[in-house]
Image (cartoon, rainbow, N blue to C red; front, side):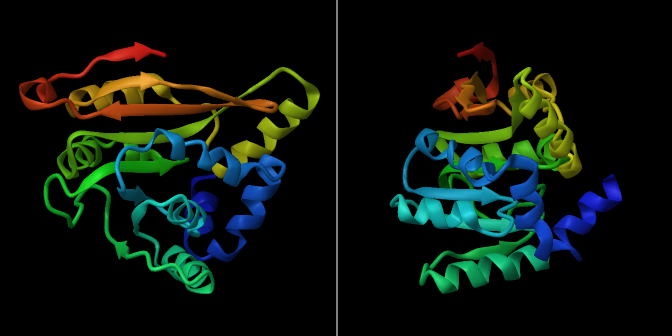
Amino acid sequence: MRTFFRLLYHELAWTYDLVAWLVSFGQWKAWGRAAIPRLRGRRVLELAHGPGHLLVAMKRAGFAPVGLDLSPQMGRLARRRLRDGSYDVPLVRARAQALPFRAGAFDSVVSTFPTEFIVDPATLQEVARVIRQGGRAVLVPGVVFGASLPARSLELLYTVTGQHKPELPGIASALARAGLTLEQEPEPMGMVEVQILVASKPHGADAASGRLRQG
C-alpha cells in the first residue's frame, strides 16, 4: 500500500484525479475546499498541493496562494491546471520539513489529506515559523464515515489512498509541541464528516505553548 501511495504521487500522478474521484464518489475536491472558510488573511501556503485543485479554488476566492510539493509530477499537473485557467500562482518544489520562506511570510498554511510528513516535528516547526503571529494552519487530515452501506463501501475504497482513519491525537500533540493552539472543527458533508483542524499561532510569549480544544 505504501508503494502504491508513493507511485500515486509520482510515476502514477496522472491517475490521481481518477482515483480520488472513485474513492470519494466525486466528493474529494469538495472535502478539500472545506478548509477555505477557515483561512485567515490573503497570503496562503499550501503544503503538498497535488494536482492544484485547491490552489485554483483559493485563487478564485480572492486569496494569494503559493503551492509547495516535493513531487515534480504533481508540480507539472498543477502548473498545467493553473496555466489553463490563466491563474498566476507560484509553485515551489521543496520538503515541508525545510520550507524556503522567511519567518512570518504567510497569513495561513493549509494542507488537505496530507501523508505522514504532516506529523513530523520538523514540518510543524517550519509551519509555525512561516506563519505570522496571529495566523493559522488549517489541516484536513481525513474524513470519518457514517454507518450506512454506501458509507462503508466508500470507506473501503478510501483506504486505497492511505488516508484511512486520521490519527487526530498524534497530529494534535505534534501541533502543541510546535507552539500552536488547536481547535477541531468537524464539518458534516453527506455520508462523511470532514475532519478540520485549525491551529493558531498566538501572539508573543503565548506561542511557546499549545493546547487542544474540542470545537
